Image (cartoon, rainbow over the protein chains, first blue to last red):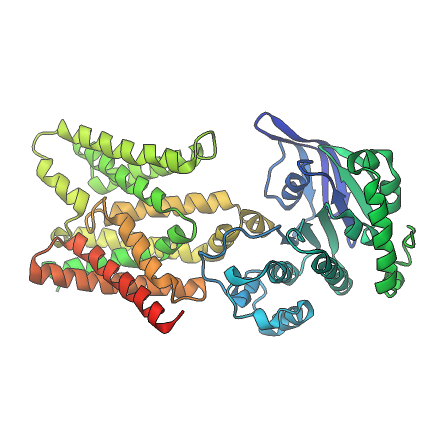
Length: 251
Length: 263
């Protein structure tokens, strides 16, 4: 049974139609990436999935007692409320220090634990947000453009981190992104969104699809190939993990 | 012991400060100061209405404050900014209240008490009302604590924890409305927001987690109450204003202490 499934989801903001007829489902352990240009409704769709936004029509079914680990683009103004990193992590519901410590170690945020969240750099904040999501012991991790504001090496490092933690947690991952060249090769399935689902399939199928090319142009094809090369280079061990999947990694 | 008006004043002021501490923190964290103003100004309309139709002033204030709170939360987010709507609600209800009161002969004297409070005139029934209200607010905030914090940090993060941020917002608005209803006798409609914001602002610089900030805000409110009432007793100053002045003094001392400590 799928973790979250939507049928015929429409989202309208006033007179603007943001999404029409989106049918979607994500299964246990699956990695799905949703790509789309600005204004394509991908953040609205993520908000529908986590229950922050009720669809104007259509249905959303979540598995019973589904635990969602959500990593927002950013928190907003965090300077007004006093909050240490450790206290923030405990909002996940996990308050046992012995359980929090290994997660902090894995994310490299142990030294930040008594810092105020309002004083963190962009990269530190994203790792702390990921930590909070992981400590929810999620069935599904939802990342909404979680690398916005990070430079290229930090983005690559962040995605490597997600692949790493996913291996130990075995949770499903849903990424909303426009950094196509970084995300795509790790995904089981890519959905190209622009108000509706334009095309979907394995990363290679989507990157070759005319609908995708029409949205993103030919240029990203090159970037995609470039990243795959890098991905091969740094992540040989990933291939064992992904070996059972049918899609082509080598590019 | 409660027969002494000064003792009653202290008990009343500490009760209000107990509830104003936690609510004030949320007002500061969520930038709701102007909302506090709107609710407390609505209280004057509530006073006018309850005097006109002769029912309990506390009930009238509570009802109008709740009505204005719900109205503002329904209307915000449309074509006018929230602070514009709050400006309409705040000054509109204050003006309407003052106009309505002018139709009632002989209540002009009482008006001062509702605008600026008259803590030295609280009776035993008022005390019971203040402390019941304050304890209810504290219990409510304690009960919803984690949900309120999540909703304050980020609405979508809250949603991923199955918390509806709109519901928490309405809860806070209703709690502030209740506080206004019980506090109007102590500090008056014009100074309630001060009692919400100033202790919380004083506590902010000394707290590293939200829980400490709430405790420090309550403590600041209590010290300000003692200091203000003391000043009022010895120098014959208006009690509500003196309490707020005491809180401002603590705020300035706190800011100075932080400068000196180099934080």
